[in-house]
Length: 314
Ligand code: CP
Ligand code: NVA
Image (cartoon, rainbow, N blue to C red; front, side, top):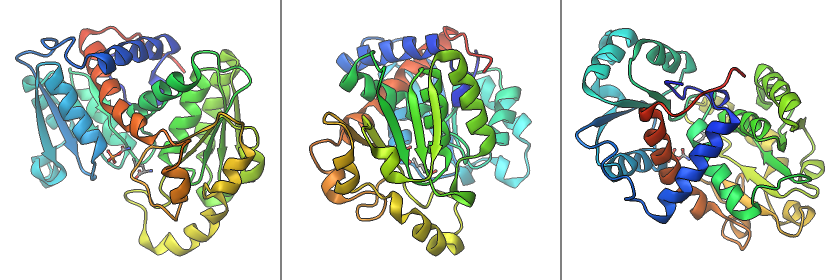
């Protein structure tokens, strides 16, 4: 496996290795401080980022490398240079490329033309690095025995909902996306892929449209912003109306099991997709989850640049 272009690129074994290494980096961030010595990693983002950018830059630094952050408007790519040419140029200077942008097809094209690992740091379709942090946090709370547990995402059927379903399916978990029907439901092809994966892993994938049915006895309630980067402001009113019943509040938490946790990839909008009392309350694990963005990206860079990951044919 050269690249991490989408969550479904990962095999269960790859994830186990990454989570194990990330847990070690959480204990000692500097345990592999020469892994990227004398090497550089390009981080190119055409969308804003707080966590992923800082996690990536600090991960590279902790591995002894030099991060090169490039804003979307700073490459000749914006002036008509092709993705293929850009990929070849960056491959000549850097050991990996971390990319956040809109179209998944652009990330795929970079991966196909770069000789170095390309890591998807969020597209309109997928957010694979987030899910590594999420699953390390889930592990820390529930261990490896997830039988009988239900992992529920509530809200927009967006990139996060896709990654949630695919990752849960690979892990053999019972995963749910509870979203409105129609325009803000997860992409049908992604749901189909997740179900196919779950058929092999013993997982269970459900798309529900009733937030209370979804929350009942859940071990995790997860949510994300209602307006994603790149969403059209013209749809805000209708979208907020459709998503309102999926807001994570105390009533939904009361339906979950006794040891349930609340998760959010952040940034959060208190009073919209989640009540302040929930995200700032005792069940919330958001700070640990955000912390693991760095430990897991560090693990990913460590193993991907060494060629340790096998990938999957999902
Ligand atoms: N969760 C996440 O990706 O956050 P940023 O957009 O701040 O990177
Ligand atoms: N769905 C959100 C996730 C942010 C981390 C977005 O794409 O903006």
